[in-house]
Amino acid sequence: MKKLQLPNTVIFKTTKEEENFIKKMTSDIHKCPVRNSCNRTLSTIHEHVYSGVILEFALQRLGWYKNSLAFDKTIPNTYNWDVEKDGIRAEVKSTKPPFVGPAKTKFKSQAWQGIRARDFKKILKHKDSLDVVIFGYHIKSPETDLIECRWTLIAPVDDTFKCAVKQKKYRAKGDAEELFYNHNAFVYCDSIFG
Image 1 (cartoon, rainbow, N blue to C red):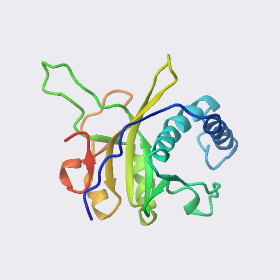
Image 2 (cartoon, rainbow, N blue to C red):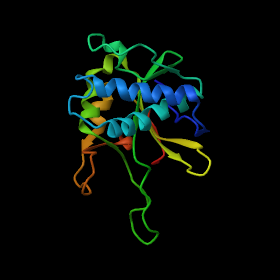
Image 3 (cartoon, rainbow, N blue to C red):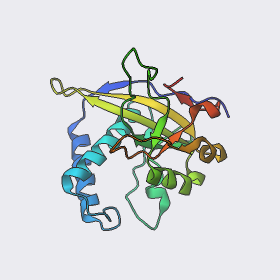
């Protein structure tokens, strides 16, 4: 396998069609007992949908194709990957922007990509139909409505993926990311963390 490269940063405004897609997906998830098994509020679902789908829209602008299949819990191919390009299927995960500490501390930046345990389990469950996982985040300008999407990690979903994910020893209060991807362990991934 050749070394993966992070996608380019994308700056864009959503179209009316994309905004309607987010509203419909939010509503569909809220109504579905399978996809909303923990009874999230409509606003919480919208926040979660927006943060993930915005990254998929950004990748579309880079030539990736969104999984357009309608969700069907009996057909994993309808939900176990998000985008595809050149035969490579990817799961896209929204994450926090990297932490940059004060100049006088030894912690200059977040040295890893955090992963929620439930996301890790989902990726492993569907690893036979995924090629890579792409982590990114977005920043929306309140003045211009421009959205900037940046990428923190792209890693292969193969036998090395499970070995590269480790338990965090320390977590900040409220940190939902129990695990991290050790990007230094494998040469095929690409990361902003060096």
